[in-house]
Image (tube, rainbow, N blue to C red; front, side, top):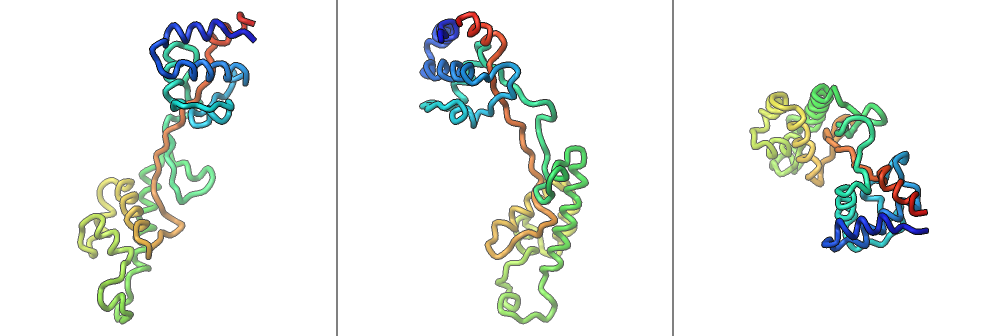
Length: 210
């Protein structure tokens, strides 16, 4: 199938790029796989496998060039650009856009409750407790914030609850002897991935070449 017009455009506009042939390969493969304006598009990480290509350059490099000359469209799906997720929740409940502070505060309170459960019982004479060498939820969090152990609760409840929760969770997870409970965790901010597909202009060029 002739594909001269797209090849000539890429070779003319991107003649100094080292990825010119791979740009052409990506565009042609998108056409062959019907990745056009009505398609849901491909994530950058999926381009090589989904199109059956063996690329020497990063797909990001070639796609950037193709977007620059209107052969490929870069877009995101309808919806927020960033998703906010409470990692301890499941299903749709994990998406907390609009209730980030509330979810973080709930996570902080659950962490504090866990810390209280983990605090040594007064009079406990096990070696780790007696000599102060044992790592506890409280000591790990106190060290992370550089606060006295008795002041951890107040510190967690003041300021940005997202930052406090995330830093405390990281401190707990870094200790091999400790683990978080299932009712709290980090608040994650995940950017929606860009997707790529041929533009209408590129499709028209391919159709006219047939």
